[in-house]
Length: 335
Image 1 (cartoon, helix red, strand yellow):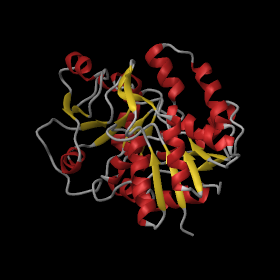
Image 2: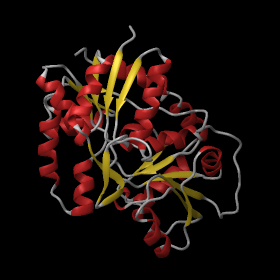
Image 3: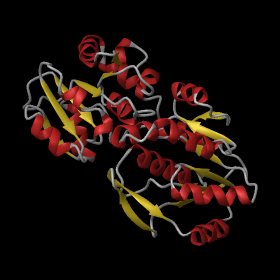
Image 4: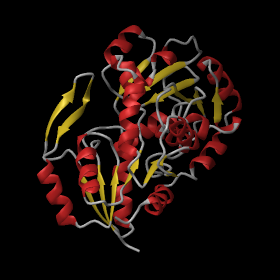
C-alpha cells in the first residue's frame, strides 16, 4: 500500500554524515517505491552553528510554518528522525492531536556531548527517554543498541531498521597499489574528537595510515601525526579509489550507533578493525570480516591476518537500501 509519509529531521543537507546519508537515501528509495514523502528539515529556517560542533547548525523552526506544512501534506504516517528543535515541534503537533508517530535513535548524542563539553550523559539520557517514550515505536539499527536503550529505561517498543550500501559507489573493483607503503590502513569519516581517531593515529603500526574526511580536529591531528596521509573529503570515484588502494578499514569510534562506513568498506572488499562496542559487535561477527579487540592495535593485526576480501563483499551485499527501506515502512504506524 502506497502511503503519505512525513519525515521530520534536524539533520539534512548540506551536513555530511551517516544520518543525513541514511535519511536522504531512504527518502529517495521510498519515492522510487511509489510512496509520497515530505521532509521537514532545517531548510528555510534560521540556523546558527552549535558552539562545540560548528558543522552542525542549530535550527530555529517556526512552529506555525511547520504545522501548516503538516496540515497541507495530510500524512498517513509521521516519523521523527531526530530529537532537536524540528523533532520537538512535530512531536508536539502529533501529541496535541493524539496521533501515532515513530522515532529513530541514530546518534549517541549523550556520549558526544560529554566528550566534547563535559555535559553529563545521564542528563541527556533523561531528555531522550522523555522524547522517545511517547512514540509508538523507536527504530534502531542493531541488537546491541536495542539492549543498551532498554537498559537505560527506554520503554517504547523497539523495532529494527538496518542500513544499506550504495553499490554503485561502494564496489570491489580491481585492487590498486598506490604510492603508499603497505599495509594501507584506512579511516573514512568525520575528523573530530568524538570519532576517537587519535586512538588509531597514535598506534605504532607498519605501513601507512590514510585519513579520508574533514572536520574540526583535522588541522591539529595532521600537525601532530605528519606520517599519516590526510586526503580530506572525497566522494564518488575518488572515494572508491581510496578504498581500492587500502588493505584494511580501521573504525576507532566508540560512540557510533551503527557505523555505516564499515559496511561501505566491506562492500569494497576491506576487512574491519574496531573496538568491541555498539555497531562493530553487530557487524564484525566473523574473523573473515575483520577483528574486534579492546586493544585497537591487536584488532588491526588480527584483521590483517584473518580478513577475507570475498567474505566481506558477500556480507555487505545483505545491506541493500531496498531491504532496509522495506523495514522502515513495516515499522511505521498509521496516525
